Length: 290
Ligand SMILES: C[S@@+](CC[C@H](N)C(=O)[O-])C[C@H]1O[C@@H](n2cnc3c(N)ncnc32)[C@H](O)[C@@H]1O
Image 1 (cartoon, rainbow, N blue to C red):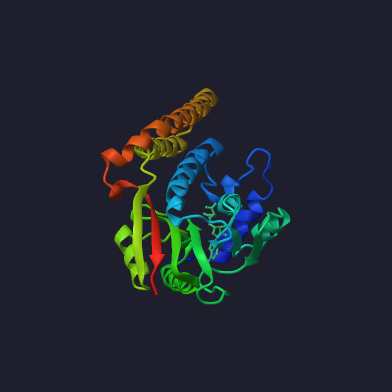
Image 2 (image 1 turned 90 degrees about the vertical axis):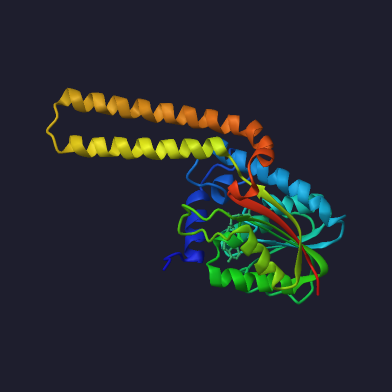
């Protein structure tokens, strides 16, 4: 049984991250992507999410004056995109702080409300497009199903639903509830949606290899440190161990940076080499048929 409390988890994260310098991280990636990783790492994920979004949104036709719902708006990465396309955007999030910040931006044609994806306070058949990027995967399974029913209810006949969600079923933390691509698809098909696009997202083989190596090395060094702590070591030996640890940290940080930069060109060819089931996320576009 998971101890994840949706509201508490996200409120805490925004509280911790809200202090960050917005000049350095103006899109708030360190809140909405990988809070435990450096900004350059987050920019890689942001770059490929934006690429997938731009390619997929083209299939929704002209968005001028169309009504869009952005679920889990966060720091407004996708709201800005829809505003630029001329749409009217309603953004919701469960975090009050995120919603107040978005309201203060005074973006034209936008309105924001604190609301949970599984309890949408909008009439039936209201939206032309519903966008939800890396949000449903953070809802426990029961709430996820309710949210999907709600999304389909508020979308017009012929309207579109765009999602990027987690499809990798291994090693996920407590606040992630992934589904296989087939399960995401069938959850939407249950409400009459027709799949238009499904593509793998986030292959990043080099980064995954790097993470594996890092975890193995960490395990070995931690075991070594534990063994050493049981022996009474001289001051000089302890000092040497400290220097080695600092050096290892620097080597790790440099290698991670190199791995991230190499991942840009590699990611372009991954969809041609690996099956989409190898990717950790998927981008989905559905059409609602009522
Ligand atoms: C990983 S962030 C993604 C934010 C944004 N969609 C993006 O891609 O930049 C997930 C967001 O969903 C929000 N969220 C989590 N559970 C939610 C729920 N049940 N209803 C609405 N928003 C939720 C969080 O507060 C957070 O802002």
